[in-house]
Length: 313
Ligand SMILES: [Zn+2]
Image (cartoon, rainbow, N blue to C red; front, side, top):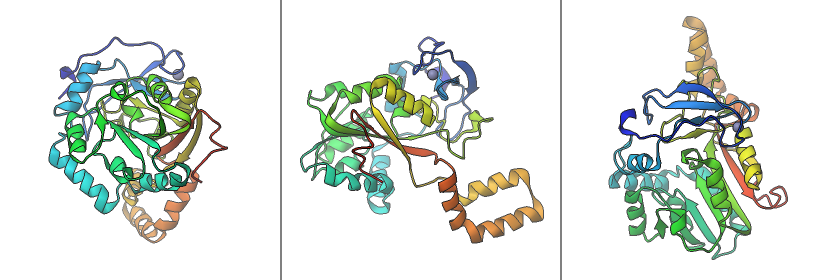
């Protein structure tokens, strides 16, 4: 699909989070998982970027359920699922959840919103009462074949609430992040926990002068690009306590550091930098983890004070 295959809502002049004035920012560039030509607005007050005007819901549904940018087929889902199982690609998430197990009794109600190929649900289905929401009908069918209970929309679930809700790499895909978080909050049990993971623009990779070159713009999959400040504001707006922690899997690789170095030096100096980096990379990586915010964060949200009930240190 290209930009001409989308229908759009009207352009908005206000920020979906703070209702303040927004300014035009950049236009998406055709590339990996990214359709070119989408306009982004920026709210300086929230430090928040979003596609504006937005494609309408039927365009988004069509995009996810036809070819999109990366065609999703049954074999893609099978491969992802196998990949998760064999290589532990979701290890950070499963590790995070496994640390929470003592706090959620066997039989607790668990909802994974945007469950994809159902990895997290499959991983936890023997312990929790698991449910999923997934927009892709192909992925829904795949999950159901694996014995999971998955519906297409939150409204399709019965009215019961959940003790634990996860939305991993989802909020950046949602048309209105405030409405989305409010809807999930309304599904939380008393004392329940909502756990998000999302990319944030506070990370080292996001050069502020070049938003069109940012990793993870992925238009129109990612309708929003958040800062930590923006996500904290949304949480406050919908009445959720918020605790942010970095995904310890920092995504700055040796290759990225070399690319950055090649922008400012070359020849013998670059070779020397390469050699030094090869020796010192483990140390450098640890240092970067400490000094810079990672490009991805986990957010624990609760109607209670998350500091008092924090599960993972
Ligand atoms: Zn704002």
